[in-house]
Length: 115
Image 1: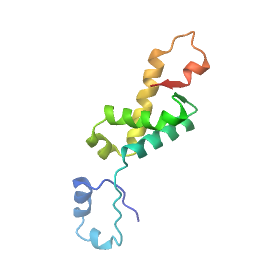
Image 2: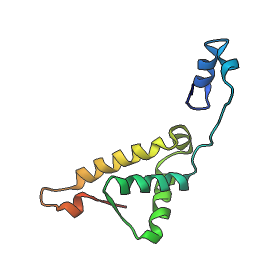
Image 3: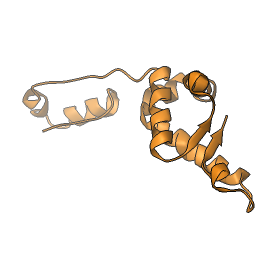
Image 4: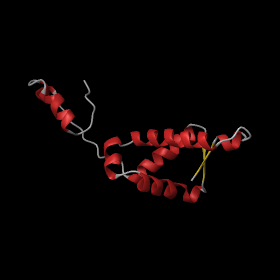
């Protein structure tokens, strides 16, 4: 059996809800939250996999995305959402992309995020 969750009070409460549960758990793995550079790498992979492009040179892309994540999210958001924050950022980027498009924009504009 696998119990997955955050290393927080909610997980502690779950385990405490059944006095015999903890003794049945033979292994516990606690993973550190992703660093900002790792989140940027994940986000870039998600952008690529979604068929979108990012206006930035390959040499600067990672550093730009990393800086954006640092500037527009808090440490606590990154800690609590971990890799899931990338999905949130991508949804917001799509929403902003949709808002700036016009009826005359072509496919290239529709599939390109600009920083």
